[in-house]
Length: 442
Ligand SMILES: *Cc1c(COP(=O)(O)O)cnc(C)c1O
Image (cartoon, rainbow, N blue to C red; front, top):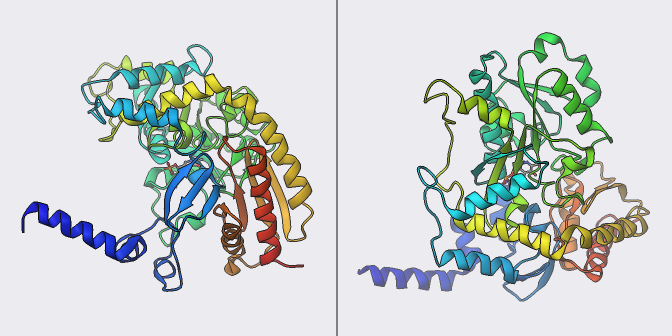
């Protein structure tokens, strides 16, 4: 068979089997029980196109993207400016190595990300691919930094209960949600000290504190914990405590970054500058996998001024580091924020969402609590039996009412792209209300 015939054959296979059949036969999905996914009665959602806040499936049905495609999308799907920025760069190259070379978009993006912070606060940017890799990078930098300044005994990390920082081994080690670890519970490659909140900071024994290199937190709100905002002042207290004990602060803004909480970054709300800032999800407005870890002159200089080549080298990197298409999308994302004044147009939408959640969801007996932080909302159901999968069933029912989202256990997540209009915000809340009433009657 010639190569060409092989191609034709596989095209035919694809055409006849259909996406669902091929998927069942060959694909393994994240955080998904395999047998339930492959069950004959399960009809997987096959998405084929999108525009703005709306996604369309292979049967022509339309849905609001109620979790911004797993918390990534900001300005909508198929955005003409983002599309053009990516295709313009595609006409030059899609990707080149960042080892031993640079390119104009990455250099400009690093400068623009730094410029979103007070002058000189976070002047260095290290690129990677995903939220988890942005975290890995911060964890390793914080470790090697201590080697550099002659404090190798400071190797531990302070992390919070219910934290989520991604699924690679290092990121999962600082994470605090058991259900994300599945059956493997003893794989932590790092020394982690875990506390429940800022009140516990002052109770940590000095011999524990003196062995910490860094503390890691999701600023303002823990996402995967079920959209749980921190008590006001938590981040500022942690920053102050870190300063007093010379512990570095890692801010995981993978979810909260780029306007999701109402300001460009969650840290701004408590006037905090971290030592490491991890960005991903919204960095490219949800178009391509790209991540960045920003850090201070202090951390960078410890490497830069090292006496040996080894000490001056940060031993970390990925094949697709600083991918050019990702950088093009990220630069255009920032340009859209400036040109369309995204944060200003978002604030009345945040107020509308707040009013609707209070009026339409809070009064339902099946709702235990509604939590909101900026344009992020979590609706906790009063369900008592996790095995009943009430959250999953409510989200399935919401799909029939034109809203796509995914729960965190019994917390329904509503995190719409910023591009939604008032009518769509109302429709999203109504879809959740109807779904809750259908699944948990009375
Ligand atoms: C999603 C998320 C991550 C992990 O990002 P990935 O791109 O999925 O690896 C890390 N931290 C937070 C707070 C997140 O929400």
